[in-house]
Image 1 (cartoon, rainbow, N blue to C red):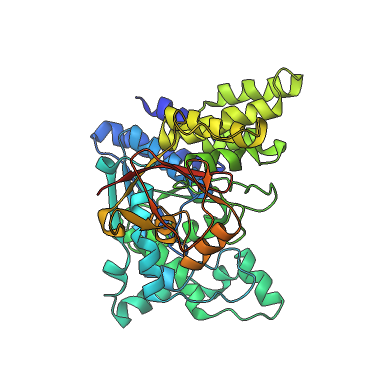
Image 2: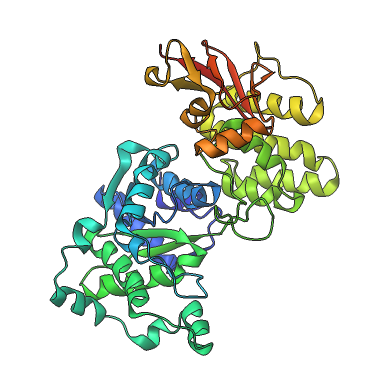
Length: 411
């Protein structure tokens, strides 16, 4: 594919390219030399789960991969202990190495639901940052000025308000920029809230004698509340590893004004296809509820396949449209393996089962769900959290309105 054709794909949905002409130059150089571009994406594991907001930039990275380029994923297990100051109105709490490491453990597995593992390099920036000598740190610190740091909106606001800004926070964009030097990034992706950090990366590369990376920023995706950006801490997120019926149900709950934005940022539909949907919504040819159904199917299909999307919609209809009992024999639902070690004499403690299939995070949460009447096995209500139950292959476990799975015991 020629550089012009690659650009048409890569610029779709993008917020900004800095500097715009250089991306074309880099793509042309890549084609002439037969050398793929190195596309960097830094991920700060401050939380363990990836949601559709994260996936916006990850899907753009996948487009680069599909065009023959290499994704270079930097898991910020070192910088994560500092915490990204972007958008922070107060001094950010530092995470421990243990917290960051625990969060990072599940990151790569989740990322590969979106990226092509064959064209992905994964590195942890502790590999090089923890080895920097004091002389090297001082050289890095000398490459940027305090005045330039205070041009950053969040720093400038806190400075005017007399709120503390630690020197440690100044180090975050410098260290992130140094990551670009180490991996020799040609392009770096990020959300619009990362623009300052990415620009610092260009300057750091220049200071170290490298050709500066091109910056590609992606829009931030609002959460299901329709107001604030998607965030797990705000509870307005849709996780990419959530069960299909949970994803579908959450998509159906978004405000109508977000339908087109979600189509553009969270699905594989082309700009032309989304433009057509937008026009038909304006003309009254499409109903928002029906359009959201298609949106839900598109998103679930991307992560789980068409059959799971069909099953997720059936679950939604059974619960919210027909108010009917779920048909346990024919419903298509994700299959979850239940390992042999959780069984004793052919039975499993229902609380342990809920935790094993990730329908509850703690024993107390599992107990609470059961006591609230939210847990069913094959439409039969589980009444006691102390119950040991028999489970056979194909049994349908349901928690609440959206969490549903078919069980496959190993015993």
